[in-house]
Image 1 (cartoon, rainbow, N blue to C red):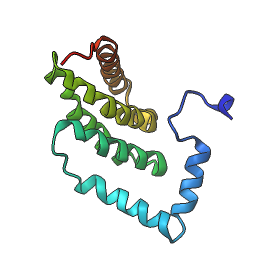
Image 2 (cartoon, rainbow, N blue to C red; image 1 turned 90 degrees about the vertical axis):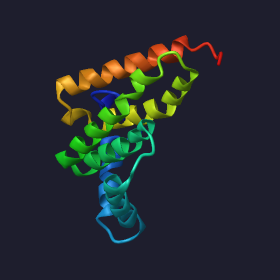
Image 3 (cartoon, one colour; image 1 turned 30 degrees about the vertical axis):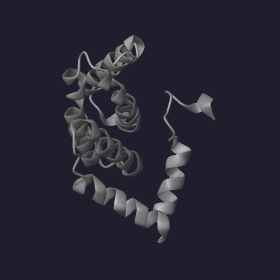
Image 4 (cartoon, helix red, strand yellow; image 1 turned 90 degrees about the horizontal axis):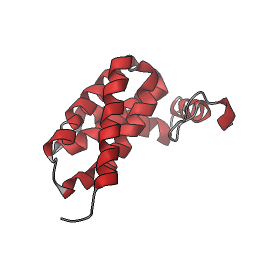
Length: 142
């Protein structure tokens, strides 16, 4: 199945998305979880800029499932709020916190990729390159 992909995917392939769509269109647990996910992106209040990556990821997931462009706008806004982390702690070991943030950012990037503009993609790629430079240069000294 991987040979049919036009680019790498993180967790979700078209087959996965079709399965999810089928399940959320039936009453039951999957549909309730889906409704809760929608609610969460409007009600989640991050306690710091690191945590904006989570609603970004969730909004991008909603876009991947529904193809509703409004979720892409929410995802990108949250990614921009999360971007401040790439400037605040320049000489600090706290940059290790980027590992989880970068994971969620990469999921959001993948899941909403086709709806981002080239300029948005490039900004996000620049963030990933910066995070990679942090990971490779971290000495472990606090």
